[in-house]
Every structure is written in structure tokens, then in C-alpha cells.
Image (cartoon, rainbow, N blue to C red):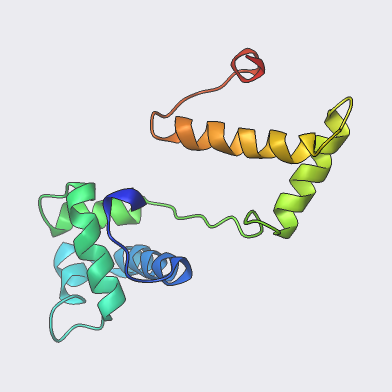
Length: 136
């Protein structure tokens, strides 16, 4: 989804803006109430306005009620620590290291990077993996 939009803000700002859209949708009484936040007299900042307008074509909502319905059921997760050098990433690599029979030349990091690539490639197709497919 992010690749379809041109982003002018940093990832933390985009995530914060997305979280605000979701929260506003859940707090709104209906599509008109949600839409009022984005009017010239509304409370939405430029980042939230830009994100909303960029996502409208991706969401495919025909009206404000469909748009608010989408956001009310959308969950945005940010997995902190998986970035390069992150604590969670280091923990995963350490666990993978325990699973590799002969960890030579950074095989644990290569395995983690390969698993990340497999997940990235499959995410666009909603791929379901099995043990057999991962081993292949």
C-alpha cells in the first residue's frame, strides 16, 4: 500500500497520522462527522489531510460512510525493534543462530534476511506458508 503513495513525511509521522485517522473514525458518530474533521474549519492537520487523500483511491470508498467503515475495522501495527540493529531483530537472529547446525559466516543473519524477503514477496499475494514450502 505504501508503494502506491508518494510520501513526503517520515515513517513515524505517517504511522502517527494513520493512527489518528483510525482513532478519529472510531470516535466519529458517522461519515459526515469524520469528514468534518478534514474541512477547512476542521481539526485535521496537513499530514492527516494528505494521508487521507492519498489513501482514498487505495481504499476504494465511494462515500464517507464507506471510508469510516474501513478505518473503524483497520488495525495498524508497528513492530518496534525489527529495524537494523533493533533489539527485537537481534533477539530473532540469536534464536535463529541456535537452530542452525553450523553457524558459519553469519548464516543466522542470512537466514533472517531471507525469511524477511520471503515475507515481503508473499505479502502482496497473501501467501500462506507451510513448513514444507519454507524448507523448499
